[in-house]
Image (cartoon, rainbow, N blue to C red; front, top):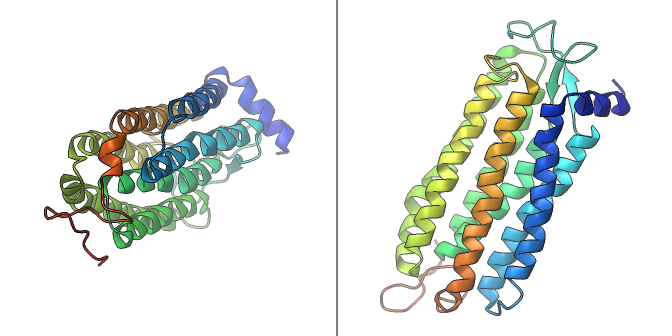
Length: 273
C-alpha cells in the first residue's frame, strides 16, 4: 500500500483516527503547559528534570503525527500459526501495524526514567542500567512486532523484551525506592513509581492480546485506543504530577547531593557503584 492509501485507511476509521489526533492535541497542550510551569525554575537539577519531562510530549507529538500521516504504519502478513495469518484489517490484506509507536517508546520512556532517576537522586550506574534496559525493551519489542518469518520467533522476541522490562522494574521498585528515601523525595517518587509500573505493565498485556500477539482483540481502533489511553496517563499526567511537585518543592531538589547520587544520612554522597 502507498502512504496515501494508508493515510486514507486511518482517516476512514473514525475511532482509529481519533486515538491519534487526541494524543497530538494533548501533547501540544502539555508542551505549552510545562513551559509555563517551568518558567521560574532556577535549580539546575530541577531544570534537568523539567527538560527530561518536556521531551516526553515533544517526542509524542512528533511520533503521533508520523502515525496519523501513515509514515510509520504498515500492513504485515502474519506468519503461519498466527490467528490472522492470510487475512487482516487492511484493504489488501495484512495486519495493521503502527510500528512507529515503538520509536515513540524508545525515545520517550528513557526520558521518563531519567526524570525519575533524578528525582530519586540515584547514581549514574543505576540510571544508565535502567535507560539501557528500557531501550533494549523497546527495540526487541519492535522486533517482535515486525517478525513475519516465524510465529515462534515473534514470541521469542517478546520474551526477550519482557526480560529487559524485568530489569527496569527491579530498578524502579527496589533500587530507586531506597535512593528516594535518602533523597527525601520518597512520597512523590512512590506515587509516580506505582503509576509508571501499573501502566507500563499494560503495554505487554495489550500486545499479547492484540492483533500482533494472540489476536484476541483484532480491531486496530480498540488496540490503538488502549495504547493511546495508557500513553496519555503514563506520559502527560505523569509529567504534570512530577513537574508540579518539583515547582512546589524546588528547595528539596536543590538540597540533594550534587551530581547523581542521593545524600546519605550524614550528608555525604556515596560513590557510584
